[in-house]
Amino acid sequence: MNDKLKDNQTDLLFAAILSLESIEECYAFFEDISTIAEMKSLAQRFQVALMLRRGHTYADICQVTGVSTATISRVNRCLEYGADGYRMVLDRLEQSGQLPETDDRLDNSHENRRNNH
Picture 1 (cartoon, rainbow, N blue to C red):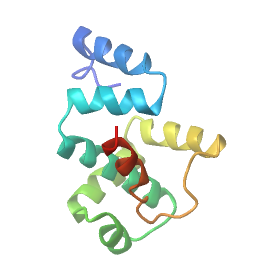
Picture 2 (picture 1 turned 30 degrees about the vertical axis):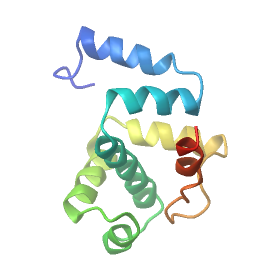
Picture 3 (picture 1 turned 180 degrees about the vertical axis):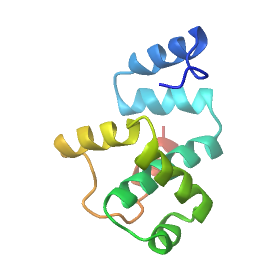
């Protein structure tokens, strides 16, 4: 764990995240605490991690996600030399059957549903 990251404020933020009980609660919380661009960026990085894990090339990942090779490289560095956070979460999602079978962008059905509320 990065000691520069760990402090009481961050601990409280993570406790707040862990208190969320559903995807809808996550949407509500993250909509309030971050910008749309920040959330899209986090979601893209997570998709990049999944695609790297599945052996896709940087070119394929750029085409599907629209992220730069610099971003892909940063995510890859985390997968190779980081704190194993991506690996831990991807393993858990895989074991529970929650990972998509394909690496194409997910459709926007969640987005459309959220906009109707």
